Image 1: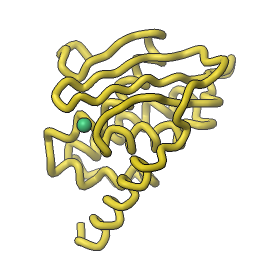
Image 2: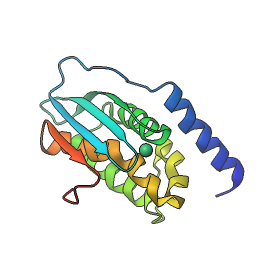
Image 3: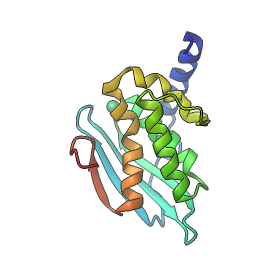
Length: 152
Ligand code: ZN
């Protein structure tokens, strides 16, 4: 990856951290979960609205943490709108592959900005926290997940 692209990606992350999208409390949510990354202190609470056809019609989050964790939650909520639950699981897998440095030719759109994080293993948990929280919300409503439990 060239330096210009890395710089652009970092700018996108910083911009989402300064102005997170879909930040706040979602009224009429029917799925939610909390995620915690004790290594960095990142906390995310995610709320979703899923309709009877398993389509995610709305997603919002609240939380505090480092720029990567907040930007990741911001982009996640943006990308989830209108996605099917099955598509969300696929995105999670693709995102995880991107961050663990496995090359993927699947177009990840805006999520590609996190490609540089794979060079910093300690930050991978910051970037995936929102996604682990998403999985918990979809599989087990009201769950609390930690990146350090070893069970997820
Ligand atoms: Zn973090």
